[in-house]
View 1 (cartoon, helix red, strand yellow):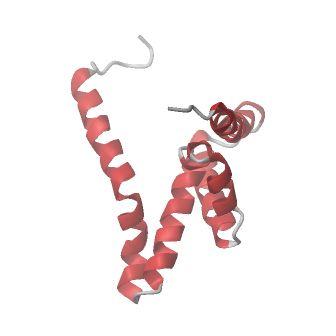
View 2 (cartoon, rainbow, N blue to C red):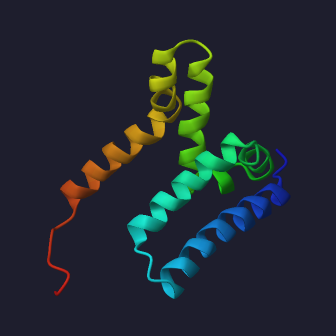
Length: 123
């Protein structure tokens, strides 16, 4: 089995750059984290719509799909593909394409909520 170390490097660099950009916005602007999250999601949709995000996904794989911008791209790409079938497909296509990720987030969030002890931030 041959391990493609170059792919690991591409994933790390692209994912790291996306996350670094978000961290710079958090540290040096007054934009809230929630707004930055929405901005990155919409940037994923926008860059997917103009055809720039898919080549990034093909180049970096998980480095481009794991950040929230990749989730935006995935939702928009699913809606676009579903729209080719029908109007209902346009409405449900994003959920179909992102269903596994959404389900994992809900299930793991629930498991960790059960395992964690809630406490105030002041403690």
